[in-house]
Image 1 (cartoon, rainbow, N blue to C red):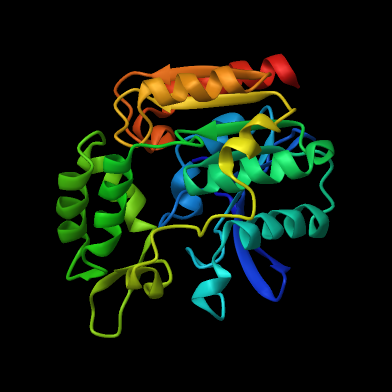
Image 2 (image 1 turned 90 degrees about the vertical axis):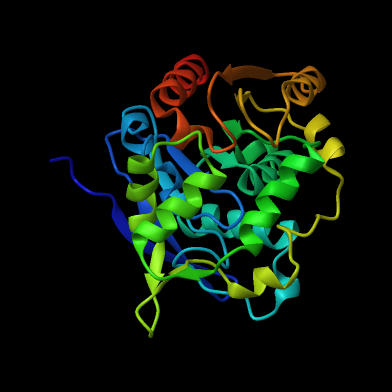
Amino acid sequence: MAAQPESSYVEVDGLRLHYLDWGGTSEVPALAFHGFALNCHSWDEVARALSGRVRVRAFDQRGHGLSDRAPKLEDYTRDHMVSDIEGIVSALHLSQPVVIGHSMGGMNSMTFAARHPEKVRALVLVDVGPEVSVDGASEVANFVAGPYELESLDAWVEHTHRYYPWRSKERIRERLAVSLRPTEDGKLAKQYDARFREGFGGVVRGRDKLWDVARSLRCPTLLVHGGASPVLPRALAEKFARAVKDMRLVSIPGAGHSVAGDKPEEFIQAVGAFLDEVL
């Protein structure tokens, strides 16, 4: 049986941020950041396979998973989360990590790379761009606005599969088993700040516009697109790729928005080939 990742914390700006350290022999650090309302387990299916090339540390961003909740709802902004990445790099004494980000985590990662080009070795963005489908983003918001707790793991599997049919119930069960928390009345609840349900639809925009951020990228960048994603249509992914000087675009057929969990083998192949090229 493969060794499990080490669960650790780092303190940044007064918040304890949780992460899974997947270890491995590589001296090249990599930081992985999940999407809105998800957690560090977003990378469970792919992190170990990538650990021969990079040492993956997968983080729970503020307000998510086992990381601390911010004191105020207004503290959940892209600028705050980018500052968290800056603090993580400093606290862990990392030299030019590869930064991997999905959806919200991709916006944060992209902004960090644009603001600090000297600190990033390479960037992997997963189904995110300066523009996304309004309808697809609404689907995500509607899912977050749905049940916050249900009576059993089985109930959560059925609920999630109706929303996310690209993934098998078996894989959904594996992910949910480590991504829900028991409540005092014996139910299972989601593992993010409940205040997000008050109308907060993701990370509040940063001080800079995402198209300006995108055009400022200078590091080697891979955009992994879900071929069946409702969030990032292929046309917008191609528009994004054309706007960035050093970007490769890989579209994975049959993958929805959460590409790494939907098609892990194909994701590993695409990211592995990119890392072999740029490292």
